[in-house]
Image (cartoon, rainbow, N blue to C red):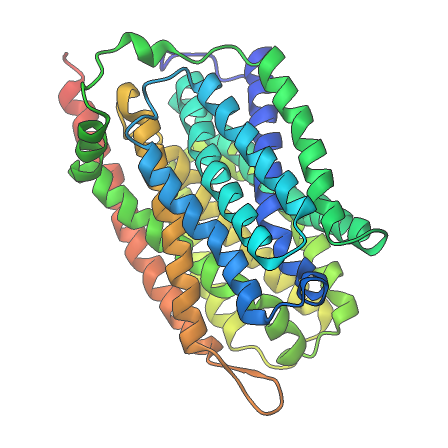
Length: 413
């Protein structure tokens, strides 16, 4: 698609953007729903918190491994067919979660769900890059990222409602049924995405993966992606416990925090995408980093805090986080050649999943619980997040600079 494509979405592009957000919503919800269901799953299956934690982390690690192993084959198929294959496996794994009645079966179901679900995000990114020119990708990323907020505002409350009026199995069965609708839309409405197949392919999938992993421009992006995931995966798992035990927020007020933050995110994520398309990725990213650093330092040093103030802090913090992620995703979408888009996004997704797992493990080592239940070590976590944020900003600036040099060098050709 030409760089000079019109700035307004066509009717089909609007459909694709909405479909990508729909699919992302289902995948994110399936991952996030485990944590709030823990209080029901553990007594329901008679398992320990350590076993439950293993079931949660199994998804992330299997997703990362799967995304990495798929990278060599990711550009050898019509992206629509590849999406259907992994999406069908994801639905099957989620359905298995909905009927699991022992810890081993639940663990196996989460591993299978991760193996298939972990690849979907990278396929969606490749489709977006194929169908949207660079001057539109910020807006598309904004729409797709709003799925994260929608999962908080719509998905988690609905899942908890279903579990309260049924069993902990019910939300998984509902997600599977919900996902079938998305699968049917892919089959009947999404057109084949196969232009990359006309390009010369490397003979060996292993060589394709190797050349993707060792490409210097890509390596810098992978490292930056790992650093960018640090903030969310280090802070979010402890957010509710920190709010209740350290900041004096009642359990009954937690849904209000998530609801307001999610609603605000749904509004400003697409706006961030539009602004990054208009004024540039780097200015928005730098502003987002400065805002994130400021709010992380403020948030991790909070004491007892009124509900309204904490909601405001959360909203501004998420504004900073999304002001980094959306322009960054739009920026790196221009990195890979068409014939390597699938492999690049698969490896990038693997790095994101595995990096998040490592970040959570590091945060768990820095945080301890005091005799009164308060979390000790949140300021240390905040300093780590600030450090990785500053380094990722410098690396993103370098990626942008390298891209401009490459584009200038290839302009005459």
